[in-house]
Length: 229
Image (cartoon, rainbow, N blue to C red; front, side, top):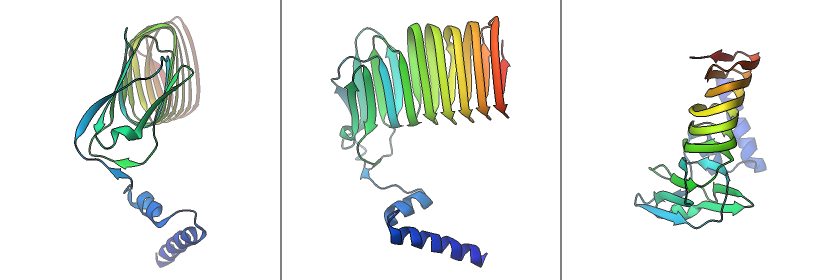
């Protein structure tokens, strides 16, 4: 036991000497305490003026609600001294949401989005996302991390890619054709009326509803793909 402790201390000291990590970052990583701007606990809602978009890419931990509707809007509710840290910028037709500084808060960063058309969402990190009233010929959702996702509406084709430990519930998104791929330990529930194509690489689980006639399944690992009624 003493040898293990000495080995641990030696490794940490070497990291500090060569500058791979600072003392603050080491302490934060080991003990789960983060540095950054501390929230004021005074919540404000700020509306952002952004150019039109039909794709969303998030990087960080946010609780996001998206409604596909008529008038575009983006609103952020957070501590009044932290809300400016959360960046929203549109490049091409993609809205990027990210933070340019580290922070600490007792509150979740809430983001409310209304957009006339939504084709794709890429979520990197954690946080929960609810998307309502999706419609159109195609929608793609990529989750790279953790968090809970709920999708609702009606589309012709649906593609879901999950890399991580998230949970995606798309039973209320009525799709004719659905493709789902999991790489990791996440779970996906999806609805497909005509065709379903699913692949699991790892320990994830896929449940598909809608009783499609055309079904293709591929499993590499301990995961499962099951038809549900």
